[in-house]
Image 1 (spheres, rainbow, N blue to C red):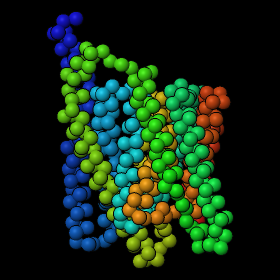
Image 2 (image 1 turned 180 degrees about the vertical axis):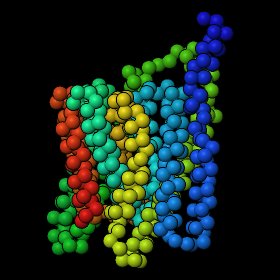
Image 3 (image 1 turned 90 degrees about the horizontal axis):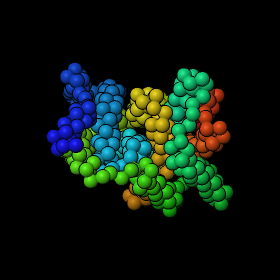
Image 4 (image 1 turned 120 degrees about the vertical axis):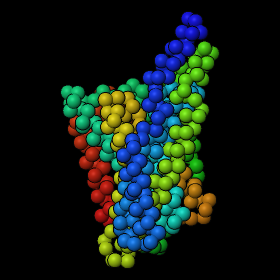
Length: 393
C-alpha cells in the first residue's frame, strides 16, 4: 500500500468519525439554555422566589448533566482509543466519568454542610442504576423470547468485582451492628449514625483501582498495535490531543456547573422545607437530586440498548463503582477535612441492598448464562422496596 493510499484511508476513517469532533450543539439549544441561564441568574441575584431558583437550576443542571457529561465520556473514550485501551475497558472508564457528576455533587454538598444529603444522593444513584438494570433486562427479554444472554465479557470481568462489592457492603453492615452492640448504653444516641472506618474506605478504593489496572493491562481486551497503526492513529483528527482536550475540558466544566446548580437547589429546598415546616425531608431531596444525577446512565443505556455487552458493562460497573470507589473516596475526603460520615441507620439498607442485588445477579448469570423477565422484575421490585425504606423512615 502506498503512502497516498494510506492517507486516503486515514482521511476516509477520519471522515467517518466527524461526530467525535463536533460538540453536537444546535442553535435553538444554545438559545434556550442561554435564556434560561439569564433568567436563573437574575432571579438568584435579586433573591426572588427560591423555589423558582431551585427549579430553574435543576432544569439547567439536567442539560449540563446530559450534554457536558456526554462530552466528557466521549473525550475519555477517545483518550482510551488514542493510548490503546480496548473498547470494554474504555466503557468501564466511561461509566466512571458518567458517575463523576454525583461525586462532585456530594463533595459540594459536604462543603456546604449537607454531608448527609450528599452521601444519600450517591446511594440513590446506585439504586437508580440497579433499577435501570432491571428495566433493561425486562425490556430486552421481551424482545428476545423471554430472556437475555449474558455477555461473556461481563461474566469474566465483572463477576468477581460484583462479589467484592457484596462482601464490602455486608462487612459495613456487620461492623455497624457490632458498634451498636458494643456501645449498649449509647444505643439511642448512636442509632442514627453509620460509621465507616477509614481503612475500609482505603481498601475499597484500592480494590477498584486494582480492577481498573487489570482491565487496562489485559492483553485480550487491549490488543497491541503495530508501529504503522500507531502512526495512522496520530493522523486522525478526531483522535488529536486538541480534540480530546476540548471534549474533556468543556465536559468537566459543564459537570462542575451542574454539580453547583444541583447542590444549590438541594440547599434551597432543605432551607425552605425547614422554614415552612413541610414534610420534605433530606431523603426526599436526595431522591430528587440523585434521580437527576442518574440520567446520564439511563440515557446511555437506552441509546445503546441493543448493544447488550455495552449496557451490561456500563450499568453493572456503575453500581460497583459507587459501592467500592465513590463511597470510599467520599469517606476518605470526610476523614481528611475532619468531618463525620453522616447517615441514618436505614441508609445502610441501600448499601446492602445494592451489594446483595449484585450478588443475586452474579449467581443468576452463572446459573444458566441468561437473565429472564421474572429476574428483571424481581430486581425492580427489590430496588423499589429499598427506595421506600430509604425515604419513608
